[in-house]
Image 1 (spheres, rainbow, N blue to C red):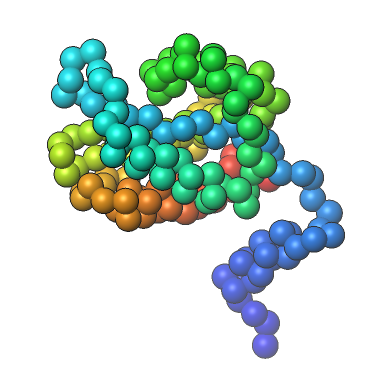
Image 2: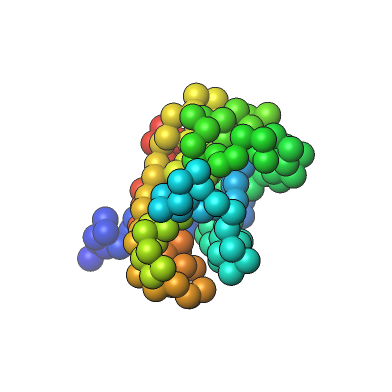
Length: 171
């Protein structure tokens, strides 16, 4: 009996990740901190301490979830430029140029849109560092303001939107 292609695909993918598999090194990615956008406040505002903690939590979840697919690059050498250009989700491609300066192939950015005290939209994008072109993006709605709902939303976006298929032109 021949196994179905549906069963073989995950096994083939697993075989490619095994040590000794003849593959190119994973692409390097500058994974920037997730930012807050509160459109209800004209001119924006600084995140509250609880929001800063949750933004750090989802940034960590993003790094963990992507670490099997890309090689994270340390962003600290460009910290001053990151602060100068922030928020990165509004800077018209500056994240790609910062990522390129760090030696990364990809720039990963994201932000949380605050809709109310209990409804948030998590947005994440992966861009080509050379061109700034977004090659994959995803969004999830967070309907409760807890650590677990924020972390779950990030894991869901990575699994079901960012890595649901191989990145275009990169296999």
